[in-house]
Amino acid sequence: MTQKIFCCLFATQLKKNTLILQKRNVQVSVIGGASDIGSYVSLFLKRNSKVSKLHLYDDDDRIKGTELELSNLPGGPSVSAFIGDTNLEQAIHSSNLVVMVSRMPRKPGNTREQMLGANAPLIQRLCKAIAAQNQEAFVAISTNPINYLIPFASTVMYKYGCYNPSKMFGITHIDTSRSRSFVAKALKINAQEIQVPVIGGHSDKTIIPLFSNLTPRNYRIEPCQADMLTRLVRKAGTEVVMHKHGAESSTLAMAWSINEFVDIILDAILGYRVVVNCYTANSNFGTKFFAGPTSVGPHGIIQACCHFPMSEFESYLLNRCIPILSREVLEGEKYVEFMENVKG
Image 1 (cartoon, rainbow, N blue to C red):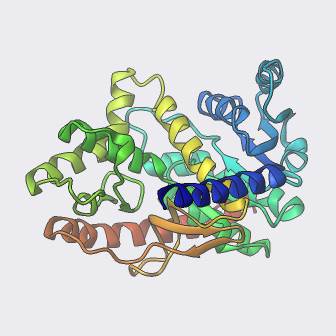
Image 2: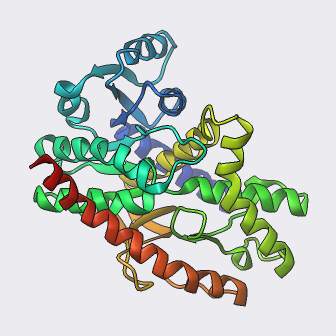
């Protein structure tokens, strides 16, 4: 009987593997590929057997060197580099997934508003190119401040007549990765064996790790631990910037988590239903956008994050988060009009 079950499982896995092999023609574009984060993400994707073509774009002509390096590695997807504004549309043409990693590097003292002003023009250019060349692509943005920029990008796409809320993602997977890591250290267990849903937004006051929903359920975080761990997760990015003396942000952790997110989304593009932590259009919590575990399939989002059972502490954090997140979403949407007025 056991052998029969094993054979059935093996046959199912073989069928799944064969299906992936037959469909392994996914094209991914990395926007900002010459940056540290972009280079690391591109290296990860060069090793991803689900990707057949990898397009790298940057305004910095060093992207050509990144292309040459990756092209010299055996196996993996073909790699092409595109430089400058006039080649952005070509860089995303026919791509199934467009990943935006371009950003103003985070420095000590930078406000969210300063980062919005620096990074919004990059997002606007990308949205314009997508509207012109590739309206069917999945669009994933890791550029901060995410709470503002996903609503900003969505508003821009809407104005261009090509907004699809089911295919617009803010990459917040790093919050999940950090939460798992901190829990694993606290409980002295393997981080790969646990899951921690993280909801809210992607800023110090809106990240809400739901440690009460830690799985497997045989692990438990005490309320006093949850408070401490939440503070650690929220301040993790700032701590890295400070310890790097303001020279750079969490480049390695960001690249790792972006790669994990992309790998999960690739499974969705290939036809599977997956769950991934991200920031999307979501009115289930009283805001227009919200982060959390999201069900995604080949045509985009199937189900946005819904309500979880929460501890008293987590409910308190959520109540504090909603007005902040609502304000930041509104500011992101209004920034489109501000940029148009400045340009006009």
